[in-house]
Length: 351
Image: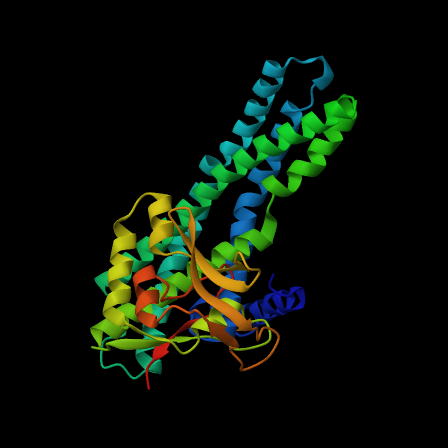
């Protein structure tokens, strides 16, 4: 989670710039600057949290009210019917929250793409216009649609999780001989964190949204300028993930990355999209080795074995074995940020 003191500092700086210097804070932020990027993410996460908070709280109250029944007196069929009704209260969240969230995405997608284009041209000395192109407009539309689809899919998964968790809590309560009030208390405690994910969840959404927008805009600008290759640029501080340390400095083809973008842009099925632009994860293999992997078709695919972790150390990437080559990473679609939920990496030109 973005540090609370840092978030408070962002709020104070926003107020100073807006009220004292009469500066439009949003227009002053550079998506390619590491600190400005976190400010963009924090502001967006705050807006998304505000857009969803009341609806999620109302859905939780509705679900808990539906579940406040005399469980010991109900048949198994009646219990299932009550739980299905409670699940529906959460399933309806997408229709209530997404219109508000989509409005925010529409505005912020344009802002991120416009500023990323301008900064990319200036920072790398590209001999192209800094104004947005039709490709940039496609990118803005894509990141808006892609993240909205992700949020909708997550609400569906959340409603399924509510149903299963409620079943487990009720079954455990009945087995223990608990009455209506005790089961209701357990349901309230067990379901609240599922329905109300709060700001940490929206920070992941905001970071993925902003990073994907700036990354594809950079690639489009590189293509316009005739740049053939780019380098994966990771921030190597103490909190940098295993994923970004492994990817740091790797070089990939601009054309291949944009081909993958076009494939993802045309896809509608969430599972297909996840296969085309997977996230890299950390886990263990059958021998207990720590590994990086991605999933495709319901199966884990090895990316690399982590032999010497470097998390917690500055300017170090660690040591790996059994690693995919850059060509293999391109084939897997593992070539552009974001590659995990809190990815801060970006792109730069090759030397």
